[in-house]
Figure: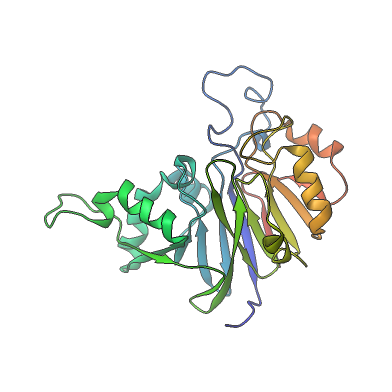
Length: 260
């Protein structure tokens, strides 16, 4: 495996499980005209030396793919099986049709097994199924693994009573969503980053996510060159909050692209 020479990451969604605006909410953030306060469910798209990787399949995947011109998905990196990270899985069938090949989903063995049980029409379809279904394979991995010649590092993180999420690093970019704690071994895998995207749900503490104070402490310890907060609820006004954050830390927004 060779270290990729060209990496870009596009934030497809920076919002929490409800998205922002939240249904039936009239708060100043949900009614804001600032497009950076409008947050689809958290996901990203990584291109590394021409290999196209999708982290999670959010319920907003169709909208994200159309909005940001996603033409190809070579593989999906699954973090965990909560609804806001997997329920767009059916949209992958369009990529199958265009690419004329199966798409592998990489992740933790137990999470992939659960995924197969949640979507039997995909992973265990009847012989005669009347509609086009996604053609996917599940590929359990741990540690450092290869995706079409690109080294991908799995990063286990705590997610409260829900167990673990399995986040990912590609070169100098890491995506760390849905966590309330990063084990020591995982912190060692997050050193020397150009860009860190990290869970920063809200101001108040939460049992399964980093809130702002914990996010900033983790960033201070990991020392990336630049950090962006993701999985954001409607606590944050994008422009106002960015004025308050430490140097080198900002809120992510949908459509943000960074390159290494």
